[in-house]
Image 1 (cartoon, rainbow, N blue to C red):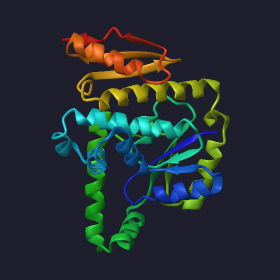
Image 2 (cartoon, rainbow, N blue to C red; image 1 turned 135 degrees about the horizontal axis):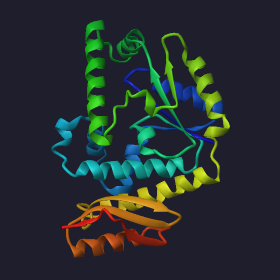
Image 3 (cartoon, helix red, strand yellow; image 1 turned 180 degrees about the horizontal axis):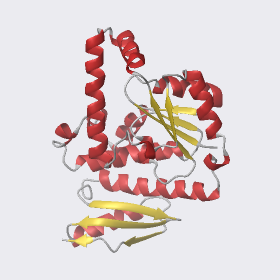
Image 4 (tube, rainbow, N blue to C red; image 1 turned 135 degrees about the vertical axis):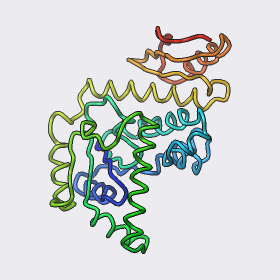
Length: 267
């Protein structure tokens, strides 16, 4: 079984393709509800979390270190879902949040401007020129926030396993192509990729717990895990914070060991 992530520009048919795949494969659909789940579990405002993940650096500059915290919450919520396989995720850069997991099929969907403006005009009742301006504005903002949040340009084709252009392929044809590739052995979960998913899930849980606790939220650290052993690297301000980070990390179910990496800087 596999995980399918769909990246797309606004009104490019991403949700429709996800619906087709759901009907064809029976995979669960996962999208914006991840933000709601993350907000509920980690006690942050859903509106603030959603806005932070959709707006560019101008707004996020006001959030400061919250950028890292919010990403930790959303990654943890997505990993909880992805750990069970058989999902189609169309939302906040799933292919980047689930990096390193072999059985994730990363799809990018593109569509001609005529397709996109027609969908937008139907949904929002805009005129042709206003629809084009709206799409261009949202696309530019998306480029800025993915670069800011993840250090990547979401338009880069090397980030994907499959790029589908709806100019000459309809949604049903796109669905057939994605489903066929998802069925290939290279995108089926095996023991190694399930272990990698379990490691990412544990690391994301630890990172989210540290980000949610006011006493450890300012610790600028990266978290990795392997078979229950957690490694923390980054920037830690003082010995008391080290103690708090250690305490919180060890409290997460599944953590069997904890160490600090060679790049930890104690200031």
